[in-house]
Amino acid sequence: MPNLDDLPLRDDLKGRKPYGAPQLEVPIALNVNENTHRIPREVIEDIFSRIAHATLQLNRYPDREFLGLRKAFADYLGHDLTVEQIWAANGSNEIIQQIIQAFGGPGRLALGFGPTYSMYSIIALGFETDYLDAPRLDRYELKPEHVREQILKHKPNTVLLCSPNNPTGTPLSLDCIEAAYEAVTEVTGGIVVVDEAYAEFAPTNTLSALTLLPGRERLMVSRTMSKAFAFAGARVGYLAADPAVVDALRLVRLPYHLSALTQAAAEGALAHSAAMLQTVDDIRVQRDRLIVELTEMGLDPYRSEANFVLFGGLQDSAATWQALLDRGILVRNVGIPGTLRVTAGTESETTAFLSSLREVLAG
Ligand SMILES: *Cc1c(COP(=O)(O)O)cnc(C)c1O
Image 1 (cartoon, rainbow, N blue to C red):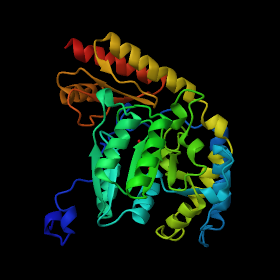
Image 2 (image 1 turned 120 degrees about the vertical axis):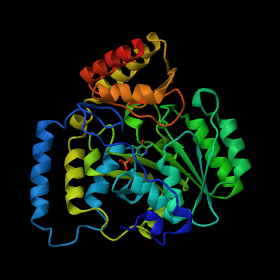
Image 3 (image 1 turned 120 degrees about the horizontal axis):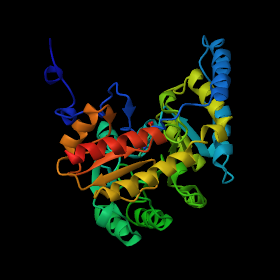
């Protein structure tokens, strides 16, 4: 049986590891920041009937431009966005992949601020694009002057800003995005991508990077239905940007990349966006509770505007991760020494996590 090392693999992929958050059967999975609440019954019924309807036409290719779905995203996002400014793909990972395919490539640099979303470097590598994690400031925060300095120093073609940041939860001010856009315009004329995968969990009245789109044709804002929308299994991500950016992504997308079933399911979910998002308040309460109770345990949670909390202060995070798993609770070890990351689940899941962790720490 040949293995990977025997294949004539591209040199730059040799020795690499695929994205690999463990997928284990456990009673309580709080490791990949899904919305752990179920989809409401009435939404499920509507999605069923839309999928049944789409099935009747599965002998034909789907709408390659998925205009119905793009209109639904434009309406959901607001900010006077038009269909021409919206794009979608199989998860925002695919959106980011299409961006790197279109705007990266050999000799070009993508810059993130690490620790940040692990897929940025994996996607960049896949398209022979250099990737660099610039450092963050104390407690993983970013400030406009620092963002500017790093961009002037490294001269990236693509800047990837995760807002709020995964895995740290850190919010990002619009000042930082404006500073990044100005700086990258000065050094390379490149693009700025703001990954707002967790935007719905930010405090109400938080301004989205969508407000910065007018007049900034090289700014792109990506979103996903995988987190707040409780739709991770459907694989739907989307983007708002200038219509010219959408034209650029059309050059690299595979024809008919969004299946008719995906389009039908996503349109069904968006038709019930209020119901789909009704658990967000609850999840925010559990996130804030995690921060309070982890602090009371003598641990060191970082500030978070997402649906998860990164916390430090552990002697041996791998041992704690395993001890929690032995109790049926799966969290994420993102590789930052002394820390673990936990998703804010339902109230009872959060309670189970906190009491198990207390047990584990008590030895
Ligand atoms: C979860 C996540 C995504 C979403 O990925 P999908 O492909 O849409 O499921 C994108 N960016 C960040 C930072 C994430 O944490």
